[in-house]
Image (cartoon, rainbow, N blue to C red; front, side):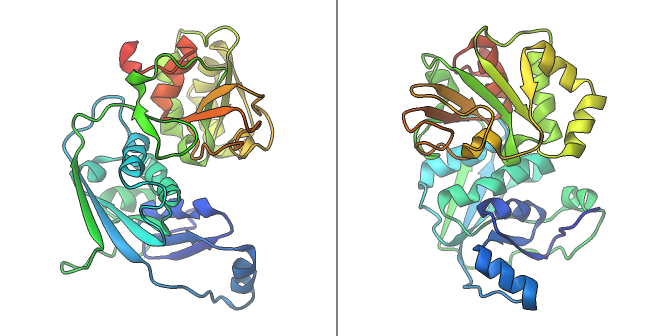
Length: 306
């Protein structure tokens, strides 16, 4: 059952509630008090945000996904580049992205300070939501504070280095970074397509000896689907372990907490100091392809290198 549809207004007591903007709705995080008030009378106070438009053109390389697009975007505008604004993702590249990749992009809009990251609902959205909702489009004369337009045909797999999501470099330039842990999953990249990408690279291979490989499906339904498709078998044979769907190491909650000096590459969304454990540990952010390739080599690796 789909609970969110295009045209909805959605709030949640988590900053990554903005994920639902991928469905063509305004979705944002609020404080616990605001959410409690909404439970009581169905009302919430909003200030209408200004908008930024991002147009992506060209054709993505094989291993480049929506996660790479949003990391690249944040690297260009900074972690406060969209402060209290709406980020509108558009262009021919976005129209070809699957829903899982769109979710990953909208999920990380908050990492640029945005209130929401919205993508115009289309046929892909309609299929995902079974046609529910109202399919609004931007006005032809809509005002934007700024319009960014990029040809991403030459974009390589991206990695955000410690300690900001904006400190981004191509994975191919980080081969010297030795890893202690790789995390595949979370609310950003724990969907079935992410697991398929990672499993496709790991199939018949092993994670580097001594490296911890942790896999966290976004939901129990996705976990069961991964079981049915044989993906779980691939991860376990590669030396990985599974966690029940949870924030887990992403917020330093449990399972995979980093010790002093340890380095982790994760498909999560934040890499601030102490985010995943010790304040003197290091977190790198990337997509599922880079994560899987890096688990095999034991260092940050562009999947093209395999």
